[in-house]
Amino acid sequence: MNYKPFVTGGCTEFAKYGVYPKSVRALGDSTVFMANAGDADVLVCVGKSALEGKTRCGVTVAECDHKSAGFLRANFPFTAPVPVLSYPRTVGVGDRLGIAGPGHLRVFEKYDALPVLAQQSIRELNLTHRTYKDVLDAATFAVYREGFEKGFGADGDHLKKPEDVEYALGLGFTMITLDCSEHIKGDGSSVECPEYEERYLSKTFDVGEGLKLTFSKEELAKIVYIYGEAIDFAASIYDRFFKEGGAKADFEISIDETATPTTPLQHFFVANELTRRGVKIATIAPRFCGEFQKGVDYIGDLQQFDAEMHDHARIARHFGYKISVHSGSDKFSVFPSVGRNTNGVFHVKTAGTNWLEAMRVVAVHDPALYREIHAYALEAFAEASTYYHVTTDLTKIPDLATLSDAELPALFTQNDARQLIHITYGLILSDPRFHNRLYTFWRKYADEYAAAVESHIGHHLQALGVPERS
Ligand SMILES: [Zn+2]
Image (cartoon, rainbow, N blue to C red; front, side, top):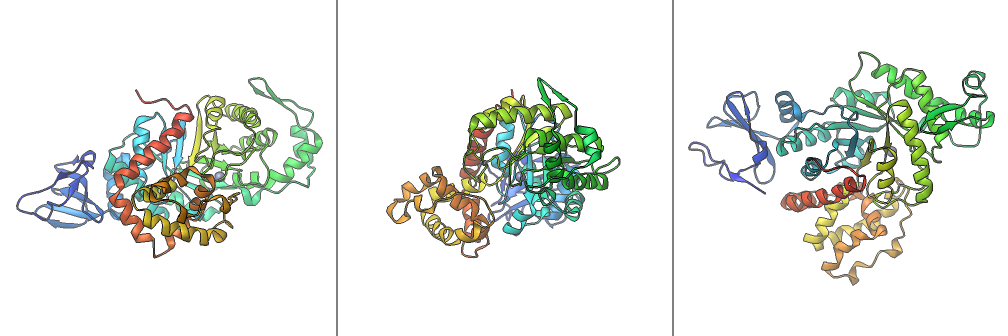
């Protein structure tokens, strides 16, 4: 890292600090910057300021806590999240560890897309023992440290309850992903409703670009049964929080966590009903055909995916929002189709892949620690797999006793080993044997980790067809 030693006046106690060069900024007559103080980063102000911390020799040093993050957001507006979904290319890069920011930001300095840096579901918060405050503050410090002024979003991801929406918006989150799955019913029944029949039967809906949709009586009754309540739920949340005068935040409707894929006809119906009720959305996340399992490439029929993505994208353009692709980590084989069919206007969410990169760096630089964690993950797998749908075959993972240290990193090219580590992250991080050792390790290897994240997420943007900034 590019540290300059920081010494002021007669105070030698600051000599060990390494200043992050891109963080040095004037604030009135004072200078503010972030520095590496060894065990942790600190926020420093030379001169008078409202920064609360320990002051000596005219220098105030504050911990990187919620108060300091608030200080940055108040004084340097680029460190506060903003709604970014109206930008053509946006990518959610949830950071479960709170340390992936610098690597992510290097990607978005290079490629012309905007990041949603804070992006966690309540489940992820519980598994990592973090709060939305922690998540947002980590993003603010990363953005300030790296001097990233292009703007970033903060997504309360997969929220299911009004109180969670209220909590995230209250903290300044700029995107809400409403998970409607608890209000979406499975296949197998139907509801006949004269009001809907009048609106949808014996009509052709011209979506444009050659796509015309018609509903049969049976199809309509099924769709009303599956999505009727979810639409009511989404509209009630919109009316409560977003309607005129409400939150200035992007609203995403997620219907992806369902048992069966969203057909284009179902997608159209949901969008059409929401529009009719005045609900303005930035994105819809349908459930696509095939499987989007954690940490591995797409599993399914690429031709079918391409054809359905074409329909979904045309429907989204017709109504004026973007398609959102969830569980987008490592889905390299479908990215070209996403980029092409959406005309380069999309939102893609990745999350766990930066955790896998963090563990790959462990495998490279601390093989002994990796071996311990791997052994624990094998024990913890059964419990973790109750949270995730994965088809991991543990018998395909080589016995670590047969591998040399140099062979460990190659485990991260093997799908079963990837998923083993991917889905056990919450249990690994919660285990007192590993938590502090891991964070100490990642602090020491921060440059290696940033480079790994930059390269891996960079490949995602490349495959999506995101142009490099000129
Ligand atoms: Zn999702």
